[in-house]
Length: 155
Image (cartoon, rainbow, N blue to C red; front, side, top):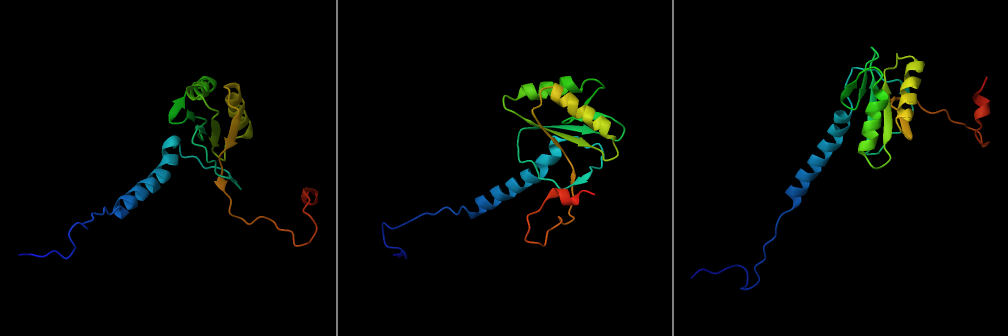
């Protein structure tokens, strides 16, 4: 006769959930890395540098202005003069307030970027942001006990 090491009636079965959690976390990391890449059309632009804060909104529309002046809304290229209609359709598709992010090449004239922002506002955009490369130069610090005043920086 064979004896069991456990007393009768005390058998317990446990499910090991650690591998499931590991796989789920890896999938979340992959999603977080690939999601920003999929939302905007890559037109080979160089963003200007600025001290920026990354938007954390899920509801956003990306307007990309290429070096050659070509404009894309999210992943669709827009014909000249069709920006207001394209952005208006994207904003109308969502019932909530969306963030419109303008991504323009650093070599683009400010007038062109201002025109794109004006068209986005005409399409109904209430929240706008301009994408920029993060600038990692340190912020100027004051070493005195006096409060900081911006007027001191002006020539």
